[in-house]
Length: 333
Ligand SMILES: Nc1nc2c(ncn2[C@@H]2O[C@H](COP(=O)(O)OP(=O)(O)O)[C@@H](O)[C@H]2O)c(=O)[nH]1
Ligand SMILES: [Mg+2]
Image (tube, rainbow, N blue to C red; front, top):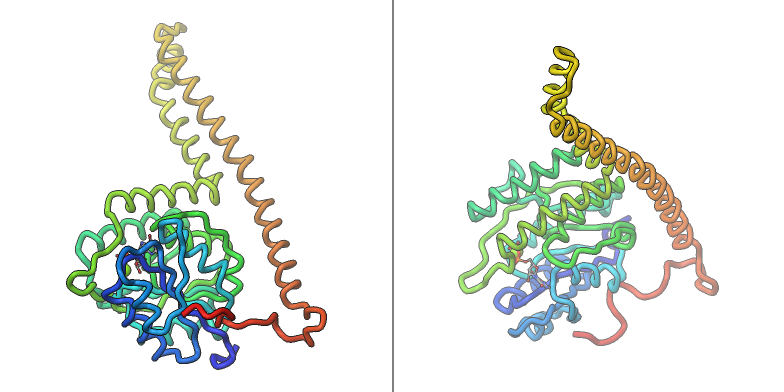
């Protein structure tokens, strides 16, 4: 799709970002004069909404607190061909937006991610955050067998098909993890673009709480591992239980072969119990694996159907794309 023809929407989730939001809006409007800039305010207690409106953004309000809920609403409510998501804290470089847009506009990617941890990036990270990001990256890359460099980046560009086709459920800061894993597992094409993260200005504070959100992110990773790779998840647990059973089991069997007796009855019961639990876990994995595969096929067919419906001209529409634009009809500024 030629860049000039695409309806581009810039989505900025904000919670108490009065210091920086106006600059972010103004910089993106300058970089992309044809784009509609939306700020989704989430019960901010400061002047975020006013500042965003003053800078020329369409401001919408989300009552459910949390970045994940905001992203869900943004994806559902905004109509555009290409979507850019960026923090309202001024830490991501607006100038990099063209490099992020290019692969999505050319149809080479469904999601491009501004990677702050790429070998070519010169990001200003707090040391603790850098290590936490690396831990999440290593965990996720090894579970899902990918080689991504930044899982948790908040600077991304999406195609319309991606935004309208990806079900998101997380309410908080686990949303980036969910976006990445679901994109990988549903076969969407991801491109990473190196970007440099900068510090928040003096007086502006990150909304991430290290322990609470770190736990949430790891919990989400495990839950998606269970849901998307059930055979590996439950099969792995099953195998671990069977291996554990070898400890008491071997002792009992060796003793039995030597003496013909089973004097350690508790060990024998333990070994049998562990093996049965392991097999049960493996069985659950096999059943869930089949169900997951079938529902993947089902989803694929739904997706094809949705694409066909979208491509079909509306009655009386003369064959054009459905009406409206990235710019909403009501005066929301
Ligand atoms: N709407 C909304 N935005 C939020 C919420 N929490 C954080 N954000 C925004 O999400 C973006 C990322 O949050 P931030 O604190 O910068 O996280 P960090 O970049 O990981 O330090 C910022 O623009 C925040 O204002 C929330 O509860 N609701
Ligand atoms: Mg940020």
